[in-house]
Image (cartoon, rainbow over the protein chains, first blue to last red):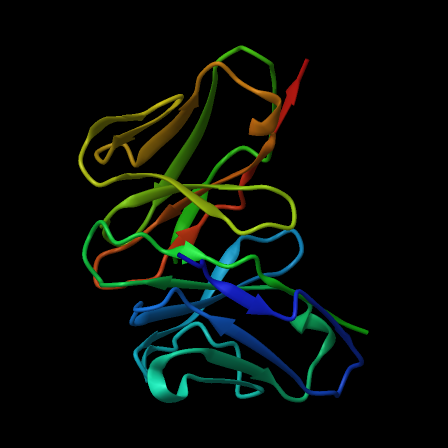
Length: 115
Length: 110
């Protein structure tokens, strides 16, 4: 069974540009999460999809970030326009259900560098 | 806010035992997870505790005390491949996402 995949693995852009990150969850997983780790800090939650619906977007830092999950399969996270403080590693995770023991399976992350 | 603390770095010798501690102060509690992350790779699930006590899984064990807001990950018979970051994460009541500590970078030396 394929794990969570993310694309691209690395992205280097200039301030003011737009970047779109993609996450493909494990097949059949209804729940998809985005997290971010900025340098020297802990991994922090951004938002949670259940199928195509946003269940919780309390962690989204501002309106420059837009997440979508059309069709309830893969998800994209767009940053427009990117700022220097958006640099970090963006992780995606998925789970099948929301039960207590449901483990979040993580992708390898996309390392975003904004110059 | 939620606060999860763990040591930044630890070093241990191949073949030895190491204990990585995690303390948390959170608004409610609904499970604690340990993940292993090698540099540039995905965090991979190691263990889950929701009740007090010890969960053993091969060379790895995890302990939880909810009254103390405390957990530890115990790694036995350390191998060089165990050099990695170990992430403690808590799920709080009413939320599905995880709150992470900053991670403990473990270096195993010969």
